[in-house]
Length: 375
Image 1 (cartoon, rainbow, N blue to C red):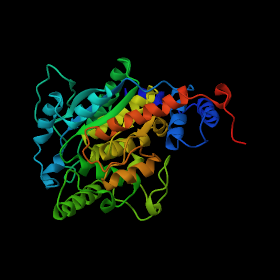
Image 2 (image 1 turned 30 degrees about the horizontal axis):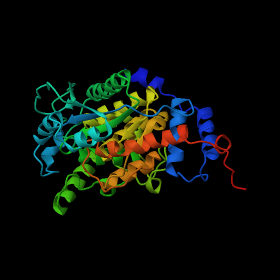
Image 3 (image 1 turned 60 degrees about the horizontal axis):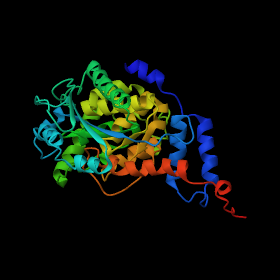
Image 4 (image 1 turned 90 degrees about the horizontal axis):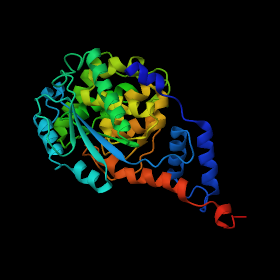
């Protein structure tokens, strides 16, 4: 499934993007006055291969949940069982992502891809998918978090969920996540795929003191070193992406799946697959915060053309998220100092994505409206 999906991902259609750019220039507004929304509408036209592109609705959020063996290193004060408890909260429609999704009419699907404790299937509310690959990852400071086969299996979970949601009629996919200690794995992935120093990409996550942050940063540094993924002081720019900070090498790009298996999470792998699945189906995928950003780096390394399907919903307060977005060349649509995860930032940004397409489709041009253009 992964091989077929990667083969199906094609670059944006240049003709459709050019048509969108031309229409933006003729719409009844000063050229460029919609700022980022104009660029976004052009990108979505290129992705769809038509101008205007379909309005990205209905929309579906997929919340991928997994636990992390690195939790044993004391990187967070939150107990690991919170992951499973929050899954139950999603299913009871009591989480923030449920409230935000209800506001915009998006569905929520919860996917157990790697929760440590067995979860009962849900009888109502948002859908629950038991796609558990293994009961949490291994401690990445001691051994690889996953085997290569497990990483591929989790990638294919994400691809399958994306395909199912698109087949159900959804025209926009949104990433969500749940996993205690997953910002530690995210920081490691971002450092490995961008060449950034661990201290520059490791943040407070769900809220930790200075001592725990220092320990968390050291854990990321040790994990990278243990798997030969520590940044070297010199090296080429990352293939297919912008130069890494100070020209440093990005060792993770040489073997994206191997890097993912070594230091990633099962939910990271599933989100990367989800992004690839959306790109293969030419459907936009709105990324949430730092977890999605780190997973997007994996997806972009596997299929650079997949970037055309990615929309950065927001900028998280996690320092690694900004590094990931800059490396991917994505502009976040909102910046609300969010650091919750779950898909909340992606859900809040979706109406903006839809507005960008509606403007391109519905706003009159100067000639059609009989409005005199600027001389």
